[in-house]
Image 1 (cartoon, rainbow over the protein chains, first blue to last red):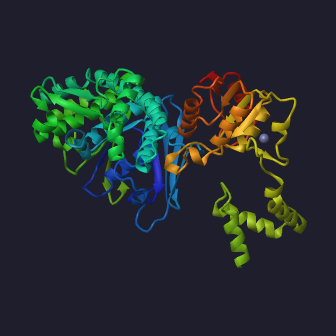
Image 2 (cartoon, each protein chain N blue to C red; image 1 turned 180 degrees about the vertical axis):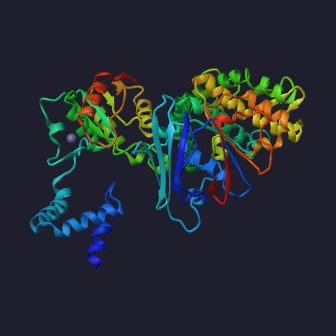
Image 3 (cartoon, protein in one colour; image 1 turned 120 degrees about the horizontal axis):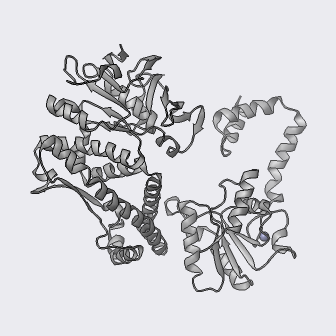
Length: 359
Length: 195
Ligand SMILES: [Zn+2]
């Protein structure tokens, strides 16, 4: 699986009137800040998932004075077929096509090209709110499991409906919503437990390799503590109903689950140094790749945005060696920076990026 | 040309007609044979007088009660609950089902302001009490809203003797029935599950 080329106009500052060749395992983008390196990663991500990792406002993706944009890429599928994906925005509307067929549900898009971004914002997985960690695990699991993705979507819909009832003060339908919330919540809870157990076979070792710190583990703390079945959950919801009514919101459920990263001395978010935390966020991304491969036997595409800057060369090479589990990777670097000691140049393309132009 | 603009604006209020299609339709109507326009206008103006919801089951009909409700050859001991009048047409076209219908007029969705009182549940309960139904088939859509509606039905009929079943894999949404859909609907009716 890999991108063969990308083409388009009016995506931020990118000038891609002619198709840009991407057909190598490693694509290295070198340029000063603000020249368009990250914009290219964002464009690739946009083609994979139909949204951006930098903004939820699609308007921001348009270059100045533009009202519409077009992006098109040729990629090699996991079955080694040449396929085409294109996204355009005009009149504030997004249109996605795969091989010239219009896609209506984003779900049909997101399982074509699995890609993983490594960015500075990933530090939020360690130091951010419980929600940012839930986001990491949701993403990791949705990537390989469309059923989990569906269940999560369904759960969130029920949650919204249930909260709407609580706000309206209409409690006649609560039993019905509790039943469904418990049914889908139980599925998600069980899947999360299993995933964290399996990821604990990967994360601690990877983290030890790059940091020399042993026994750093992931932990899942379900909001529905001690619930072993749908019935337990329904009972739990009953016990909490008065509180839910009082606050007009659903106080328990998988939307309140907690994930922590624990060292032998406490949570990494509380006791780790900034360096250790940054490294851990990087290792979480690496775990995401490895876990995806373990589950699907496929290798994702990586978009590595500047994050390797923070590692010294020894760690950088070690890191690259440790997660060789990608089908294609895009790295951004600053000019005159020595990027890798060992890199297979035959399998790499290097572009210098200046004002949205790639040479 | 405000007459043209008005027509475009009114056409574009129709489902799945955007401003571009609306203007193409409007220009087409200007050029078209005058008799056709008169006929179309007349049909649109009188459709609601000629076709209306059946006072018993809620499906669209030209006579009240509808031919389904008054049919002597159909099975009056089975009732199929659907969201929309179009769903009745879909189920009829499968040719497999020969019972009664009940149209709810939508599905429960508090975020859209649709609760139990906005739908046709009261009439259904009354029908079930007064009729001699043995089986109730829930054919709501396979969506969150359709599922919730089905669960609500199950809850309120918990203590009745009527056997409740649900289509194994819902109806094609929208009511446009193509050949493939007909097979799906027939299969879905045969494979309905105890609910
Ligand atoms: Zn009728």
